[in-house]
Length: 289
Image (cartoon, rainbow, N blue to C red; front, side, top):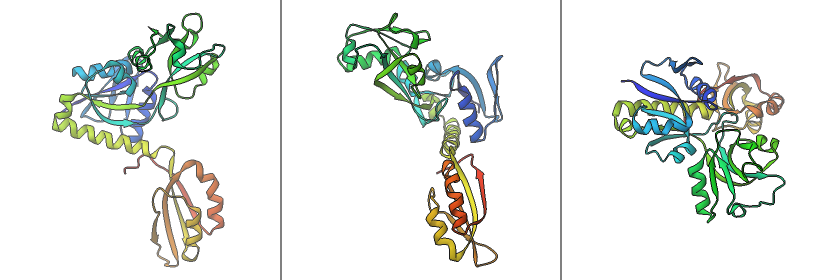
């Protein structure tokens, strides 16, 4: 059994390869090849633009692939959604497709764009959004550099953003959110019905979700005397209740927990003050719920 898996080429490529690495898969890409190698003999990878992924999965060229929910909706492809994977090229979060206009314009909402021109790569979804708001406007496909088109080439744009910094740099302001999107693991409907391929996809799903759960988290181990345990636990935020075990000296306990990496620098001094000793922080690759 070989699972043909599409890896998104372009802006999501590096984040996806890194996520698979955290999940336990080593994917090696090359600028000269559209067929990355992977250290799993049951998987064959192919680099495909995220915009085209759903169509190739629907047609059975690929058994499965990773792409944005926005591009699945835009293509109208009939595929099986295996998992929502909340990561993006920068923030490992969701992205937004927003309606943006020049700072100097008087446009305040989508209704102010009646009869105007909107440039975007997300044409079908933008047309649906306008129709839902009762607005008739011209929607032009943008081949790139969409942010520079207003006001000369378009009155407004619908563009994807994580932070909004590129829009602000081009003197644009967001007036509405057209849709939110995140990466999805999608599958061909026939492939999903195949027992072996479905099992493999569910394994991949579990490992990828485990890697996402571990993002920004670290493990913490420490030793503490029984008499100081309550003071240490009062300092320690935990994913769930920390694991506590007895050491060879029964007057001492070992505490093991998971916490947000950003909190470590704040609580380590407090843990030391509370009586913790032998504190060890270690990285996490996966947390499987």
